[in-house]
Image (cartoon, rainbow over all chains, first blue to last red; front, side):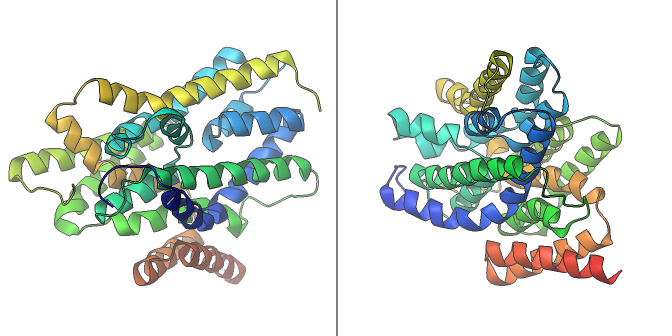
Length: 240
Length: 100
């Protein structure tokens, strides 16, 4: 299906494909729920934040700066900065939404996640996809389990005491390591941009700069190098 | 089950700016066709984005996590099965941290 669209079959496939991702997001949700409880947020406030903002890193950062009364400007600005990384993702997926209108379009965009973006990018590279329903399905499943996980973390805050070295905390990293594998096209195309992205991110991270700056600068420098090399060699990437 | 007005204001503010980030890139790009270099950058973004995400995270990790990452790559390359890869990675980290 190469024509951009939004189908029920796509939604169901997205729900199915996203299920293993929950293994990675659930422990993260538990951590956010525990932090939320520790900051004195009620279960209702915790669930509202998770359902409406649906952004794990941003929630963790906002809870980090939580105070009495709740710090409106600081928390909202921190959330904006942490989530800036998603703006180029929506732009990169623009072709998926060409023929999608109304609530389907705005809901799918609202459920966009790092993981959903990575899955969509992989589909696009394989020449599959462009079914926005798939993206919606992935986002919906992650959203539902996110709310459950954060709620569970809040409820069990006293009982669950996972040590920082618990192997489950490796799961969120494992998700992204695994998602990189199908994106790798070979040494000639990817080695230099990926190495640059890693070096820039590490260098900025080393200076103590917080998220999202190492991520944004690393991603944009790597993508710029790849784009510049493509323009010079005229090597068309397999797409469309 | 309390809902304090100051907390609600923060939650609604967080939700609004997050939605702006999620939908904003698409809305801007649809309104204005990007230059070719920007279009090419967006096409090449996924790999560098996740590398830039993983690199600082892995730099803070121990040897067990690196063994876990190697297991994730091996299983993902062999099976293309995300659930199996994550399980292999977490299991490797558990074994390595138990062993050392």
